[in-house]
Length: 208
View 1 (cartoon, one colour):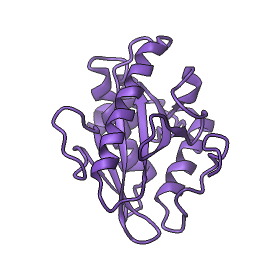
View 2 (cartoon, rainbow, N blue to C red):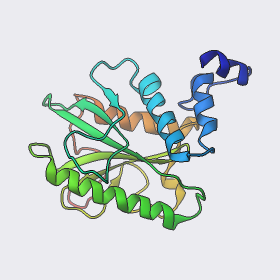
View 3 (cartoon, one colour):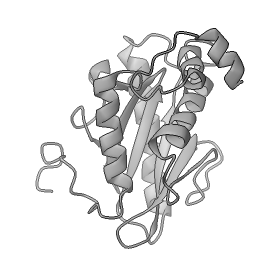
View 4 (cartoon, rainbow, N blue to C red):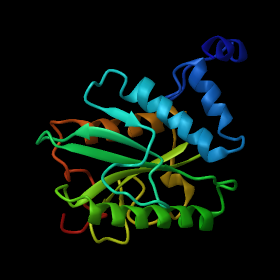
């Protein structure tokens, strides 16, 4: 596969989190059917081969979270890490088949579905903190946010509070500036020296 990717992209130059011809092949494939599956493959490979490649304390699992068992709703893959208190935590990751990025109703329905899942996850996750970090993605674009137990909305780690109002809330993993922001946020979340809840979300969570 790596040899084939190098042949397909002989003039490849790294951009954003796309650091190899292998990832370039994944990046280019997200416009083909089934789109959400291709997006998941891209993100899993980025998380494993770029973002957390040197982290023994972070794992990426391609199955639903073990903390909540619900047959229909599921996270598409889970990033497991340890918090400052050495407790196991999860970042829930979801992807959607969004054909028209300008169709905000489709993106809104996707996010509403994720919010519902996270509410159920948090009510079923006994012994965990009262919030969970979440990644939602379509195509090559990603958003990271946080939802508290009982909330019907969420606070983006960028892009504001509540459902997406335009696609600028989603950052392209192949863009240099966007990738730096994505990397900074995910490394802070998974760092054991990071104090959960201290993100720059004061404008999104009044009083936090």
